[in-house]
Image 1 (cartoon, rainbow, N blue to C red):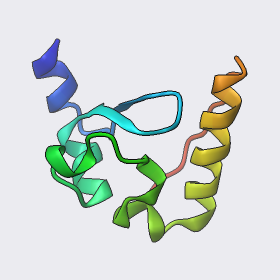
Image 2: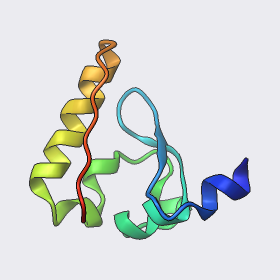
Image 3: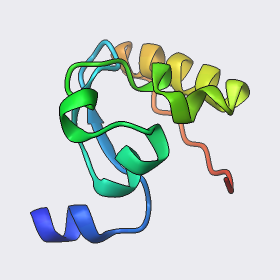
Length: 79
């Protein structure tokens, strides 16, 4: 499972309820501009890579807040 998680070209991260990173794959870390140690426990949308996309960053933050309330959201965008 770990090999599949790390080898996918898509950024994938598991977040805590507050949006902080629990674990992220290599693609997500590269996009965020963080190492695994830097990412651990930090809020994903505050990462340098997300700051280049303010609309997408705001959507991510809003989606995490909605998810805490049990609302499912989806979004697809080419970056």
